[in-house]
Image (cartoon, rainbow, N blue to C red; front, side, top):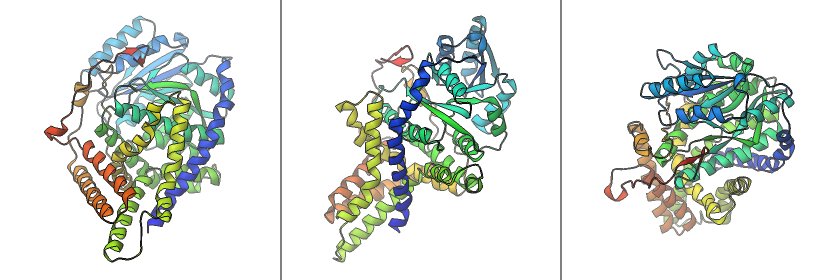
Length: 493
């Protein structure tokens, strides 16, 4: 049974290694685009999605004034569903930008049906250009990003969209933000770069994508799943035979989650959405006549990434229980033996290799940064429980866990952003407590049986998960971080 659960993880690991190898060659192929300029500068509609983003929306809109693109060629639309002070802040900023010559419109509606994707659908009626730049409320365009995307689409007319690299202006805020940024660097550097080079499907991030308007209008009319609309758009485009480019050299800045609990809930939302996509579109992918067999396999391996959460829990629990049972009955079985060591650790090899390459690519290959790779394997473990819960619930057809990551903006608003936390979901909390307690018990069982590597793995997982629960225990009380960070040119000092 363990082997059955581990096979998809092994397959994903092998695919990840292949993508990592090809990702090294990807920027060599696309770097020449940096030296080019478009023959014709097309009109672009910059479309922001916003919901109660009072700490970030103003800065994101102001960044439009600093980009290297003719202002007369720009249209800005804010699809705003806000119900707090954001509406007033946004209206004042819109008035300011109009006074400075920006064509800007706010799209609002009476309800929040379908959340972000519903807001975007409602805003599409205002779009008047052939290209749409999809952005989230905290997305900050850098000077040449938009021009880079336009050049890429002009030189590669067969492409339907361009995905940009994600950068983080609050990367250095605390240890959690640095780890989260590394986790995304790892995905971008290995999976997206490699997939782009090989022409294989990859998932776009909705707030970082330049897409042809006719393609977006065709796809967005579908009854999209509302909690991971970006990945579902990616799947539907792949099924239709449409492909995109990934520009690893061109960034859009965003904000990392500053707390493990926020990171976990984000992981839950994404995993549940991907489970729903596998459930709802699995047959479409298999039956698609516009995708090759290798493209279908690549897309499934991508969508099954959250399955590694389920596999990790099942394999470790079953292996530990069987090992301890064998120890009690004095049956010759050792979880620390070479077979199980290889069986359980081989899938992690591409993770460490890809992490090291991601740091190198980002220019962060220093001892203090390298140490974050093994730290990420432990800290990221606290997302495993909710990731597994979300993916399975998605496969079972349960939808609707929409979680909007609270943003703190310039770093002085962490306490305000914390007020945006949702109330604790009791069933999820109980599930986490159960898995956490089981891991503590299993680590003790492994220690008693002399299997020390599994002991450390399970104990580390249990401790990190317990810490991430943010229980109201005085000794674990949260310490406010010193607010010594500030934004300079959309980067944190």
